[in-house]
Image (cartoon, rainbow, N blue to C red; front, side):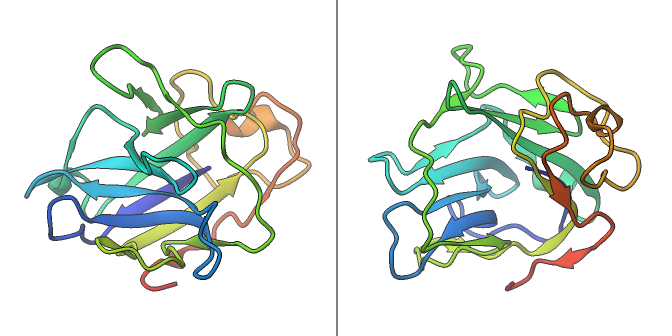
Length: 193
């Protein structure tokens, strides 16, 4: 997953979350997964990963906390990359890899990500009603979901619209086969999608 994201606001209560994307169902919640932001303090936030299949459902993706004022009202490129063989998730912000924790672990691991035909893919919303989790207040642009491990090191974020299926993967930062499609250039208001 990668996209340009502009936050208009963040959750107001420390510990509360806003969903960037989810694969979820309101009625069959066993395999619900989501990626979003969590309010860390009155002025900071971090990114999180949730998988309902784990006893530790919510896990921070970044050791670093970010100042909400640096991310409010301007676009930032966010990439969440998964190495399928390791089950490893890597987070990049504006092309820079963000370490998962202070002990030097470079990523979080989740090998229990499964497809569930009962789920829908949501942008800015999670179908399951969870106390402390709300919708994304902001905008998503140039959303791209690919099947390959698009980024493996720091990179220059795309400066133009993301490539469409059939174009050279190297033209958009990738290195795998062009097994993807996207809706480049479509801005989506993610409030209550």
